[in-house]
Image 1 (cartoon, rainbow, N blue to C red):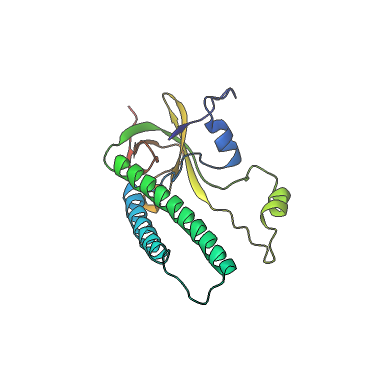
Image 2: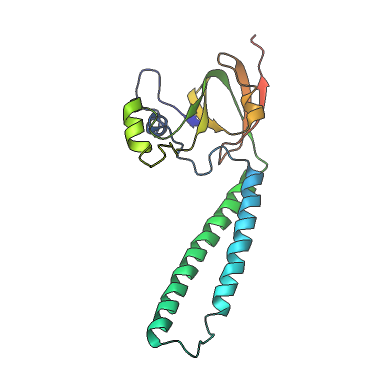
Length: 197
């Protein structure tokens, strides 16, 4: 969950800007830590396998290749190795974040202010969104949706991304709830209704 601006309009954190434009500044926001680990392991395994294949062909020679072809293949090989290195690094970070976020949870208690679908630039007028985001032959808006939940807590309003449909079904505007949230990606693991005193 991220802190939102105070009700008087003064910024409480950078998430005021994040909320305005409809994005989350948290990488992998709201994703399950276990899914991060599994997807990271799969991507890492594929990238390491492909890197092994590319490096195996590094020293092989093609008898009919010209010097220009060798130079082209060498440059292409360098680009492929760099791209695979980036994928390996990102996969390792994804796995690390998922592992760190697997067990710890913090409780966030408050009243649900809103639960709504958001996407980049949804604060713009409708005609501006169509002009900017549907500039393809099919006129399809390819922006990704995310579901934003905003809680009114004792520390001020807080926002987060919820991707689990079972959790979303338990969130109703105006209800008092306690969310169990992972610290890094903000994955909402559980929703518990809180009875008013």
